Image 1: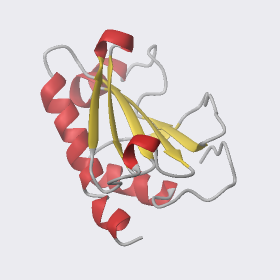
Image 2: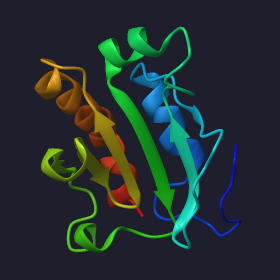
Image 3: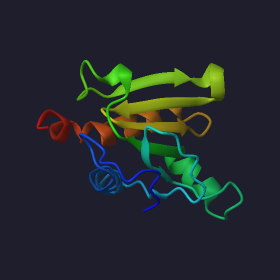
Length: 135
């Protein structure tokens, strides 16, 4: 695991997040080229690089995903951290942002599969809600 910070992430730690997303079929790995910021504990991606042989297959199946686990909940999440938030940033950078508590994932879905891929990611993150509610 590539860490940007040794501080504890709360309420969701990196191991719980990556384990849950893998149970939902996402092949996330530590970001090989993380761009760290003060609030970030660790970063994961589902495709290592656009040039890889599996890139098209993964994007067609899952979308191009990058997730960050932050030290604490994202400001928009603080009132109701157990709720999954979906924000359409396609006008700004071509992605959707899907998050829960202190986890934020950006997804660039495959053309024509936007709804299915965003909803699938939201469902996987929703599985983390009981851990947020219990903290």
